[in-house]
Length: 229
Image (cartoon, rainbow, N blue to C red; front, side, top):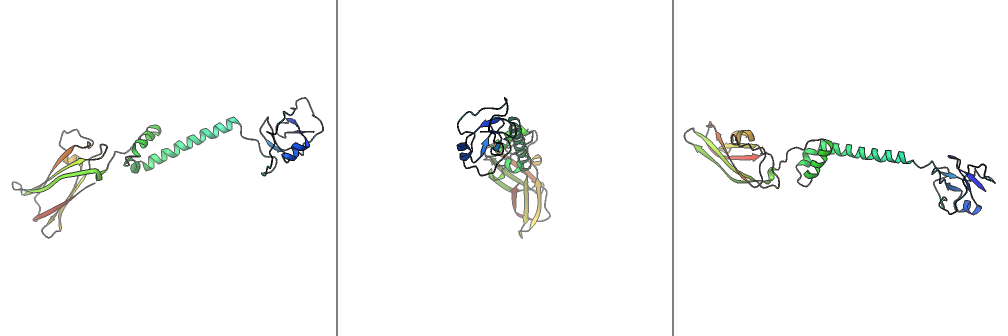
């Protein structure tokens, strides 16, 4: 007996035993379609374009449960197109992660090198590294300046991180004798860095001295607080 693939027309010789073992389900070696061999059974090869059986059971699906007449498997071009599309979508997704999560990931020492490589690939920019928790305060003082009646704030700090980072802003507040805020101000790096220093990033392990002049307050000062942001 013979049967024919409904997709490409290739004919195959089959036996009752093969039909029973495969439950009538066959895989076409020519086009890859899985089909029900029973409706196309014939007693002889119908034409000269038919293919004789090669023997073996590789084309038979014993215990097939999904049903008959399954569609043909995707061709090489379609599988390649899906693969390329998946890669493109993955890169696009990583690009979105880099763009929207770059600020948070850029401050993670473990993630930052990977983020830099990803941004180099997709064309995004990694925000400058900043970790104020790793900045060590070596010295801080607030002393009166008799000549002006004001005060001088002196701060010595050092970057103890593993990488250079942007200079922080300094939030300085002074309090009066009753412990109430008397004045406060935020100093940016441009205001406290020495003029002509040429520094754009805070080097690792190097101490930096900051001196800030405060105008004479309208009441006596008894203390101060400061914060790096």
